[in-house]
Length: 394
Image (cartoon, rainbow, N blue to C red):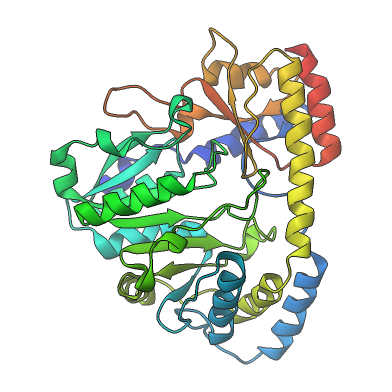
């Protein structure tokens, strides 16, 4: 028989980080000892107390059966308690929180709950690929908002054409920002919220990196600015980066109960949820901030080492304020892809993600990631020191 992909699947290129993994495999096969800054997957072990909580929960839940679609009550209560401590706001665990299988699942599927074919989503670029992929699979269209250094990596909402706004349903924001590492000032959240309410848009805030920052002041949540009932605002959170739990696939969405209800209805038709014993381990993780502070301190050490090495090699200072990424500008006269290729020389052997791979062309035809590479600060501190030594060969 003739096996053909759907038009939607055929239209997609390779997933950027899958392509990075393929390149790492090629280099290793050639005997190159690479240091992999390509994919944002922490290499530090999940803290031991979380693993112990998982072991206890696996025994306690031995006969628990399928997990709740929307999250165990204990997990949703823990999320509510953590949000109150961290952001000073109160979420109703029953109606304003829904568990998710990490952030990617929620981000990708969310447009299916909101869009009709031809509706538009306002997407930052560079940005997390599922903003685009989820829109495409929901048969929507993306209007890209370039994030540039000149604007502090904030989107220019005033630049959006009226014709686009008439079809728009969702505005995605993401701070601390992947990949630029930028934090958003309070005025931006107020501006974005006012803009969305004027134009009838849902403000979808990807907050997967709020616990990893290097500035004096912790990052805010869009929910803090939304007021009572969180009218028109939904946030997306994850245990992945906060607690080095990428493989556990646990997160949540929270905010306006009407939007959360739509997400719940969608989710119950897609999956059976995160295993309950993993949610129990998340409850233990959310109750502890010590391990988060320790990881934040380690990421700061790695950021400072790498950025100092890049500056010593003659590159612009691109030290981030948050996340686990360095959005590094390429040497003058070189594109990000050319720079990434240079870093792959066997004498250097550093794997990065070319900025163009995680950016889309904006309305003016320019790709805002074309002159950048993204370093993910996931190698160990000794490996980062070795990477800095190799940068001398640039």
